Image (cartoon, rainbow over all chains, first blue to last red; front, side, top):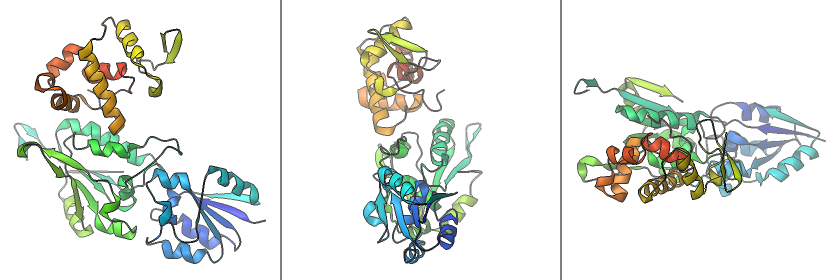
Length: 102
Length: 139
Length: 110
């Protein structure tokens, strides 16, 4: 079983997402929450890094946090899955452990 | 600049953080609304992740927080007429002015005509505007 | 603190502002005003309803200066004066009317 990483900081403000991507082993999952959802958006300075990461890890983004910020679910990087609170819970139970990056 | 015996100072509020993840955006807005009572020369800046504060169609129902994006449209009522948005910050995020809500004020000296409060500036132009301020508050 | 109306109890803060603005009903505003010793007439209600609409649109209660200007525009110049509003709400138009309207105390209220 693999680990679920959650990232709640914007990639423009902290290097949390970058660190998480470089330290997550292949096969693990990253869930973007709170200001971390900014990292899911296409056509930003950080989109390429996120796209490249998806060769090794699965990336999810929390829909309610996108909506709160007026960010369109249709504009996330291809391959990222938008999930709700119910699926957030499922993800935490499906993985061996949850690592919350700060 | 002087108005009678009262000195008018240039106050700038610099907003650089996304809304909701931290309290900075809302705190800044509250401070601005209070400070507006003191008739100073106020301007707001939205740069870096601060540009996300003005995104259209914010819907906070599911996260259970107050959607204060509606409050920005009241700034005109508070005589806040200068809202600078940094072009490069939008570009780095794949955004344009179209993605942000429009903000207006009514010009008392022009028969209450509605005018745009938003001023799109380059990083270099913004640097000059910041340099002209008496006080800059950072959020 | 709490206020009782029609046998039901509503939570308020120590200054009498309703804790949950979704619980508000006109009867609550009337009861609060009666408790303060001054029943509401239609002129009070004009202002209270205006404040509720303003809050719905902007998510804040306006400062007195903003309220005065906006009331003048909406209800006529003769009503858009602080004299008129203070006569209706002697404890401060924004403060007192917001309380009866079930809204939080205005930001930067002076």
